[in-house]
Length: 536
Image 1 (cartoon, rainbow, N blue to C red):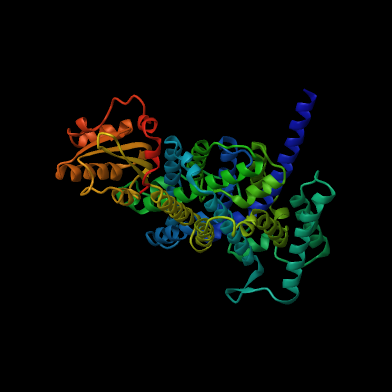
Image 2 (cartoon, rainbow, N blue to C red):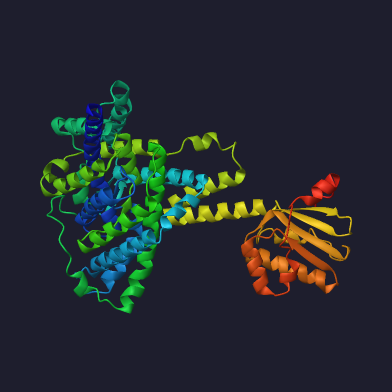
């Protein structure tokens, strides 16, 4: 009992410290994504708090962190802009359309969970997963490069001179602490210690560098400080519940729901691999949907799982729900009470943490296995990585799955075989091997010689699986060809569902399908050598 309590206490300590680190890393991310979407920074911060808290409590993957994300923010840009154009200047109607869209997005996600669609994430091939993490690592890296720019005469320019070298030095120091501290002791959270050390150097050294506060103000915000999220009653008066509204926000909600679920479920799979445990994908769908509904009602921009912050949490020892709860609650504490202190944290420290996340996220093993895996898998891996960077995660994953499915279908289409033998009564037997489906019917048809075959034909599907309607149609047409030239055909070892479908298509199949079979391999015993004849 004492051992159990001690382990729980140790886990609680890791969860709390890791959650605090995540909360610090969430601030600039949430603010940056709010700017991308064209809304106030507090809209992003509220989303990070509410989504992070709800999914940590009710989600299907303890230790996974959710909040406002860039993948969703880029879709929201057009929505907010078009919504603003529909209202009077200064009315900010786009913001209320955003809230309504996030609510509908959450409803769609909850429906996906209720229908248990989360299980389909298991169909995502490993090369797609590797491409996903590699592409996302590149996206995170590119997003951090923007921190090396500053506003000048109304446009963003790269830092230069002393300012740039100071920034690079602080980033390198942060990364060095995170790399070296675990080699000395694993009892301290390296990311949190690195942030505190670099922040102390900047504050007490009086260094002129970008901080969280200056980052918010440069983006047009007034600061980190705010109140509790408020129920947005104006949604129901400013966004009319009409068919025109549904047509406007519906496509955005569907895209956001798809991106959010794909990113969340793939992050869940990644955390499963890192922790060697298994999350519940359908429960996560329900939690993500519920969180987005609440977020929309209380003035947040919506969100999903965040791979960067999730990796920070897992690497920092956060394994339980407590880590996500602490991160969300501390973020709210920052907003309510600690904004003056958090605004002094240098951006360089947070950039350094995210660069270490990039290094930890990227699947470096993909370079090592490039010449050891099929070329089709290499193409899928590179394709998904590239599309993640160029477009977004949803397009990349869908494209990767489609290409993988087509490759799988093509490879299986080549595996159809027909072993031919003659029985003593003059019947020619075609024993079919391999899957019969839309991709293999052309090769299947090529195995038969309708013109030169004897009067009696038997087609045995003992080692074949009839998979789809195309295959059934191919069997039907083949029988029609034999009967058209006056030859009889018998079908053996068809699956029950295939029998039903064939019998429904034409009553004549009732007499063609052999039902009473004593020994499925009876002819092998009669003539073992015949089995080896002619593989077509």
